[in-house]
Length: 313
Image (tube, rainbow, N blue to C red; front, side):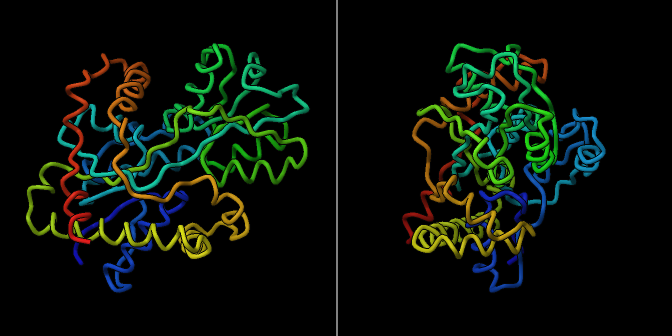
């Protein structure tokens, strides 16, 4: 296997991709730590953590990517940020959906999303978590300016911040939210509005890689293995937990408690284009550009690898 697969090894959405790369390579390859930046190369300022002033965040943003990946997993938000300059990037299919929610402190007087008005809310700026927070606020008639957004990274800095009462609520992917709930105990409350955005975590590539027959064949094979891994994880979640604990170094019990906040099922999300249209408006404000048209965003999808993999099972 010479297909170079990149993705964040410390996010729980990665479970089935880790399993698939191992199975496809016979145990000789793994998911390399990175993201969609490794498909196209990017300077450090493009990384989400670049806007945070902490030492931990600076270390993250300093890892400027090189274009060394053939495929890479990542959330929609990061794909859209990089694809603004590289419209040759492609979403192949959705690997996992993260079932996001907000964690707040009851003792801060928070019982609903509306109670976040005027409160300090920690999140990782320019990411899927920050976008989810904006969607939750919007669903309850609030804007981002109605809360004090505190930017922190990495994820356990957010968990510490709410436990130490430096913020009143946090919005972050797992297992950061679960760590916060563990630390807060009965003071923790989960806020989740039915129907509000679930994080969409995809397998991505570029048009040039898709046009390479050898790379494309391997993409199809990898997709088949992700489909099989997803079935295994649905039947035996502990297998997925074990893979994540090994890859991330996170506590196995913490991962097991947070596992239910993920939908490990590869699919073509029916309203994915609608989701991109909405997200791109949010990202465009941050990037200081006009949102892309629906027609332009539609060209970022190529489902042919997924369809070929499904047909060959």
